[in-house]
Image (cartoon, rainbow, N blue to C red; front, side):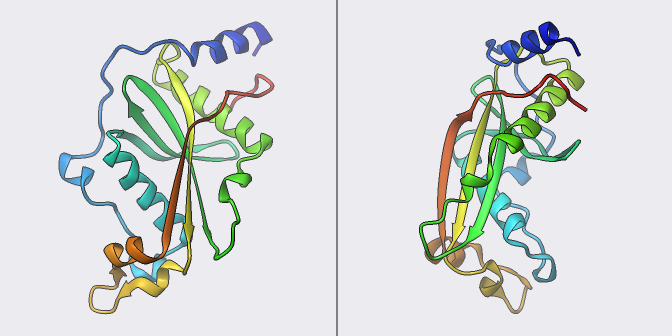
Length: 182
């Protein structure tokens, strides 16, 4: 891709988007996060479910989850007031002041930018407004400690009351990269 096409594509990420976005989930799924069974619980999967629930409470709508891209995936693709929002979720079990958001370094930002550009191109949305948000989830204890023995599922209410800190960085970084996308 030539640099002028790349520059135009990156610049188009900031254009205003005036159309309604389709939701691929049924309405019932908007209220309950999809949590894995106890044997499939990972810090990342629980963090993603909590981030999704948090964003929906703020009025975001889910467009796509775990969209596969070259070099990784886009965790959440949301709609917020006419913008496409590419959300990177970082989760960490820690009792200190560690910041899981530090893992969204320059290399990760380039991968996310390429994926976002590919997603926008695939959907014919290059002229729509878009941004990158980062949601960090810090667990004071591992989520597996909050599994209900009878249902084999996370007791989300208890987990959220005692063991979670959520930070949402809106427009966390600008599109960046060398012009290549897969």
